[in-house]
Image (cartoon, rainbow, N blue to C red; front, side, top):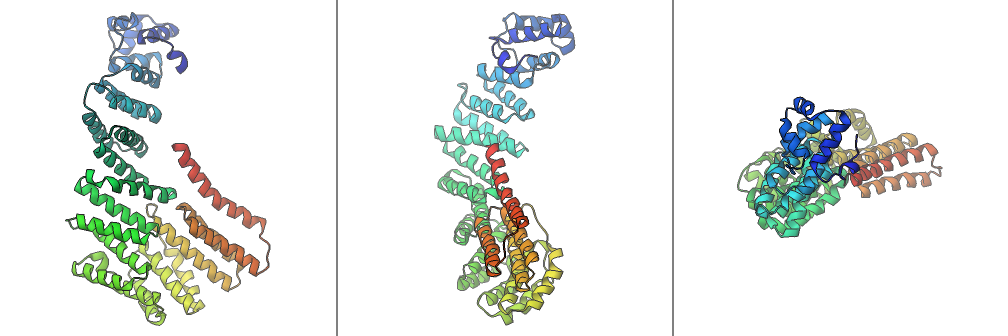
Amino acid sequence: MASKEATLLYSTMGELIQKYRNHAGLTISELARQCGIHKGVISRIELGETRRPELKTMLPIAKVLEIPTIEILEYYVDVEQRPDVLFDLMKEAIDLCAKPLLSKIAFRYLQTPYDQSYLLIARLFDFTETITDTSIKLALYDVIVKYAREHGIQQFLAKGMLQKYLIERYEFNRLHETFYSGREILNYTDFLSPQEKVTLYYRMSLHAYALNKYESCIELGKLGHSEDTSRNELRERVALAICNSYMFLGKFAALNEHLSLYEKLNYKFITERLNLFRAFVLSRTGNYTEAIPLLKESLKDVTESNRIYRVNELLEAFFHVNDLHSIEKMIENEEKKFLLLDNDPNQYSGLGKYFRLKGTFLMKLNSFDEAMEAYLQSMYYYAQINAFKELAECSDDIFSYHCQHQRNISLDLLEKLKKVYNVIVTKNKLRSDEK
């Protein structure tokens, strides 16, 4: 079988077919019978009378002659200028999962002189939205964004960047990078529809919350609320993130103000957590005796996905009052109840914090080896979301405890630390290779 490089030496599709047909030992009549294409059509292609045969004609011929489809597509994209034909070529490239070739065809499609650029890019955008494979969608959105930027088509620059962001924000090892990609879109909100604008503000607000960027969470969430005239679950989840952000910032007056506002609006996510917020405020203002009973009560009816946050808050309160017995009981009873949601970076962050607290507790009991295992587990969860600050803090804890207890770091522990860091390196390398 001829190689791709050899294929590209043929000046016409006819020469290519003739070469493969002779190699297969087939007459034109035999080839016509096997592929279902009339022998006169094949003959005119081979003679060069039909220099650009239809793709639907070539694919059955190529299948019989075992000409790789990707080589047929490569030939067409170099000579074809008709938008509809190039559009069909894109569909074939998608079926082959040939992303570099797909991008090449998509650019060629947008550059054709047969239609206005705006209509072409609009059609490509609408088509991209129908695709289910996210890697294919991203490849096409990359083309749309690049072409729109180069040709000043601001609407599809904004829409393309938004759709890319909505996909890439779920890549936990790139949370910081994708957040700043989202920030760029904020410069183009005038070119988004009202619903797209609200979606951007809400998703960016929750993204900021996951990164502990609480001021940004509040700012973006309020922008979304000001634009959103509907009543929906996402609106309420953003309201909850705003309240949590005020709490973590220690702005308790603002927190109480917003709790009252959202309670009047009857936001379910807020009304169900009013006592919990009161417990958190009491705990964070040093009123642990009052906070602990409320935090314990909050664990009775909590969902598995929300349990980790309340457990961590209660553990910290117990640490402040030095109630090691209660900490031990919680660790024995609670750990098996945790639920890890793969699409929620906050879960990884919460588990990272829990195991760091567990490591701290075990060190108080002088259970050195078990404490190190807890810290390693904490680092594992932080590594999944590239939480570098928290990873550094866990590393500092490990090395500090070794210094305080005058212990040498074992080779086994160093090997385990290396594996944790390899998680980050591998994830980032995979992402770099995909680019």
